[in-house]
Length: 228
Image (cartoon, one colour):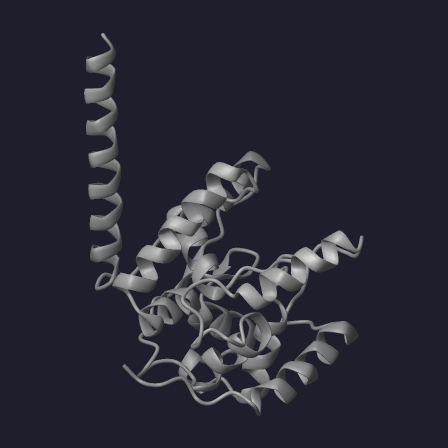
């Protein structure tokens, strides 16, 4: 009996690693047209009796997106994105220190970790989900590389109510494609990312405009993202 359980567990582990690695390899080349979060938001909209809202246009980061967009999100979300290997231990240490001091808890997730969560997992704070997030973060760093991670991030991140990705938010809030977004446009979009359902790049508050100015100041210290 015990040997059968061991056999099934081994088969389950082999299936898990084979399927997850295969999915990461495939998405290195294939556009990510839908994510678990998009589906969850759609179900939430239906549960409230609302019409499904899902605006999402996949575009190439090199040829169809403003060069300022990756710079803006790095300035806002992960300034050491090009230096770390998926985990920013400096920011993690700061977050732990602030929590120990009783200060407001802040996130220490990198862009790589956010991509791992958004593309392969579900929202939540359980240890199981965090463990899987770390696993997928390592996989995409090894298999995808920084360019692909950033491209997937900018195409799949939630940027408003039912709006996913830079091109969708560019058309919805600025009336132009992502390739024509200006430096201030990109900084304003990046300013919404901590909570895109609360903050709007279409009707920015005073707080949002201050955040935009802060991000633009940080963007001066970040180089244009290297082409593929």
